[in-house]
Length: 209
Ligand code: B1M
Image (cartoon, rainbow, N blue to C red; front, top):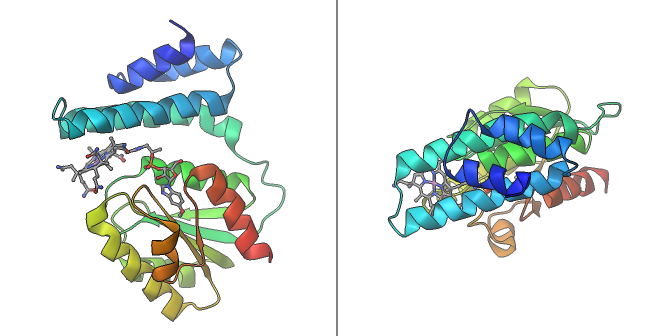
């Protein structure tokens, strides 16, 4: 089994203690950080499918997510930008009622690497807290809202509308598996991205045009 295949298998199995070492071994064997990251994202897809089919339950999903987060910690320094320029501050969070943070953390990492200073509000963030963070921090030019559940799409809409009403000069970007470009524009977001890499590209585009 290749090192990357081992990383993928151990993330799926939720082996938090083994994953960081295996990620390092995959790097030492010459694998690109993006390749290892994609393998771990694929693992979460497998975990989600197993959950949907009733093969595993919430605790197994949770330990797989923890294992992936441990692996991402090893990759983070290799994917972050050099911090030499700043495009301004980006406030990021997962919307109210939603506890999923892996995708949000990857998006945060990539937007940071594009040249933003990040203020991460975590998960389950009420709409007003995004506004408070815009007002409490210097040079906030962008707010990034993540949502992973179809049931929290109304919270995403409320977040975007609350932010745009209170802070009309700040751009808002949204994303997450159930979010579509149509939904993003319907709720009044300035931008949408399907994944972390394109979120960084879109973020830069939104504040530099
Ligand atoms: Co949950 N969960 N979960 N879960 N979970 C999903 C999302 C689900 C699809 C699983 C399934 O049924 N197949 C399903 C949602 C169904 C739906 O609404 N359509 C689901 C469910 C139902 C639930 C619960 C309701 C289960 C229950 O309790 N019965 C519950 C809800 C809790 C809550 O939030 N209130 C729940 C709980 C959990 C855990 C806590 C156990 C755990 C999360 C732990 C954590 O995040 N720290 C968990 C996990 C791990 C998953 C799956 C397996 C993996 C999610 C993940 O991290 N994916 C997930 C199944 C799946 O995704 N296939 C599932 C990897 C990550 C890199 O992808 O987050 O999509 P993703 O992020 C991508 C893009 O979406 C995008 O870029 C990212 C990277 O490229 N993106 C953005 C994300 N945010 C963006 C923002 C942007 C732009 C792009 O701009 C701002």
